[in-house]
Structures are given as structure tokens and as C-alpha cells.
Length: 437
Image (cartoon, rainbow, N blue to C red):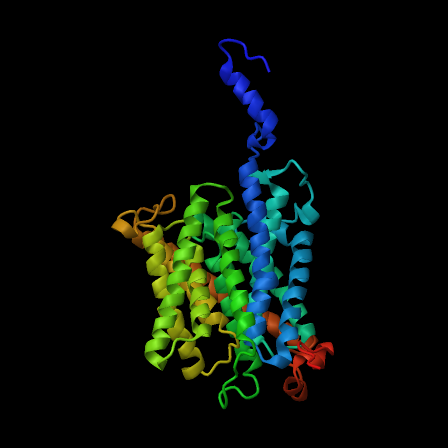
């Protein structure tokens, strides 16, 4: 190509555009290719957290005779949640509506085309990214009633719960609702995902009662290799969960990923060392559970705190969630089968409150990035965080109780005693997880 004198820069740009068309990342409409590429990747990572991550993590924790039922729950809930999100869930969560619930303006993605944007990314991608959150949240609740709920009840409960609990809380926090307007800090789902799932699991565990054999004998995981594999997938997928919630490929996303990793590592080690001191040996199960506690606890704060804050949050997550787990099982004798409430529920509450502390810019190496607009002090931010926690806990507990009562009246909640003893794999699905010849 002939380069005219005085125009070398223009020529170089033209050559680069010919060689790398993707270099044009933004246009006049506001679309940004880098942001879009990152959220496409994050969306895949968050779905990866449920399928296969959570499915394997939960599947390994139950007994051999129930492993397929847990995998089935994760797959079926993914399907149910996705369809409901398309039909009207997304519209009610992110439609204009009022401060408590959205409207039906975007039912079946009405009015949303290829060129529709949310910020700098296509709205179809934003909707899909949020769909993966709507998939994993009711799937987390599985851990509260694992090994004893009817499959028909699981489907009906998950559908009603998604509509009546998850969607409204999502609108309150992220869809222009009253908690968001107050200045609640929930970057990636401390209230929306973890508190709602944890509280729902606790209510379900209490209402269904313990599994047969709970308390008189240890109910051990059947396949820790499967659980650790799933835990590793959750750790990796969480980068999309928290980093993707920045909705941009920028420093905010990078910092969210960094503090997420630090909190997970610290939570895992904290739980491990506590068990080591208390019981004489560090367990693999405790280590991966501590990792999940660290991940869940950093989630609401991940976009507002620095690495120092992430370190302390992970440390507190391991300590608090470990003791919450022991208290729930040993003292209260509640059979939250896979520890959803003490890990996700308590972790979500703790992280939401700590977001108000470590978002402060005056804590030295533990400083964050400031308070929400209109909030001028740490105590002011903590107050808003506390309101968010209380409102989410109370609303979730009440509506979950009502939904379970409705499901019980329609199809019944718990399998028959002989089916529970036989195992849900054979009793409900006529299949086995392991056919050893």
C-alpha cells in the first residue's frame, strides 16, 4: 500500500483495521465489543456453575441411592427456570413497574431486538446472563431438602418460588426497586441469590423434617471425588458470577475477580485449620465447604472492596459459617442436608453487612471504593445493608413457607418412607447412578 507523506497514522490505522476487524470495539450506538465478549464468557461460566458444577458438588454429597435424583433436580430446574425467565420472569424482574415488582412490558422479550442495549452490551445477552442467576438460585435450595422430596414437588416448588421470591427480590435490588434506590450494595447476589436460597433451604428442611437416620448415625457423602470436582468448577465459574456482574471488561471486573479468589482461598484455609485444631485432622469436605463459604460471602461485596477487605471477609466467612454449620446440626438438630443455610444464607448475610464496612475508603490497606450515592458514613451504609438483609430474610421465609404449604396441598412434599429407604433414584426415576456388573 502506498503511504502518502503526512498521513502515516491514518495509513497504519487502516492497515490494522484490515488485519484485525475486531479492533473496533465500540460504535456510536454505545455497543462495546470487549464488554460483550466478556459477558458472553461470564454467562457461560455462571451456567457452568450449575451444570455440571453444582450438580457434581451436591451429587457427591448425598448417598449412592440418591445421586441421580440430585443431578436430575439440577437439570430440571435449569430447564424450568429458563423457560419461566423467558416467558415473564425477566420482564417482572427488570421491567419498569414500580419499586416492588416490574411489569409485563418485556414478556417473551417483546420489543427486544438484536440492536437493543443494556449499557454497552446487547439486552439479549444481559437477559441471558441474568437467566443463569435465575437457574442457580433455586438449584441451590435443593441442598435443604435433598434425599426426601418428591420430584413433582421439586418442580412445582421451584417454579412458584422463582416467580414469587426470586423475581421480586431481584427487582428490589437490581431492577430499579426500593432496596436499590436506598443504596443497597449487592454486587452479585448476596441478598438476591444467597440469602434467598439459604433461607428457603432452611424453611424447607424444617417443614420436611430430617432424613431417616439423621442424628442416630452419620450420613456421609458417597463420592468426595465428585464433590471436589464440582467444587473446583464452582470456584472457576464464580469468576463469571462476580466478575461478570460489572457488566463490562474493566478494572471493576478485574478487582471483583481478584477479591473473589482471595476470599475463596482464605475461606477454604480458615475452615481447614479450624477442623484441624478441633478434630485433629483437616478434611477435604471442610476445605471445599470453606471455599464455597468464602465465595458466597464475598459475592455482595466483590465490586466494592479491595484485596484487603476480601482477605478479611474470607477469614470471617470460614470462621462464622463453620460455627453456624455446627450449631445448626449439633444444637438445633435441623437437617439442612447439604448445609445451604449456614454456608450460603449466613454467608450472604455476613457478606452483605461487611460490604458496608469494607467499602470504606478510610481503612488503609483494607479500604474499598466508597459508599453508595447519598450515603456519607460507614454506619449509614451498614444501616442500609441491614435493612436489605432483614427484608430479604423475612420476605423469603414467609413466602417460602406459603409456597411449600401450597405444594404440599397439591402434590405432597415428602416421598413415602419405603421410597426414602430404597432411594429416590430407583423409586422415582427407575435408574441407578452406578450399575456395577
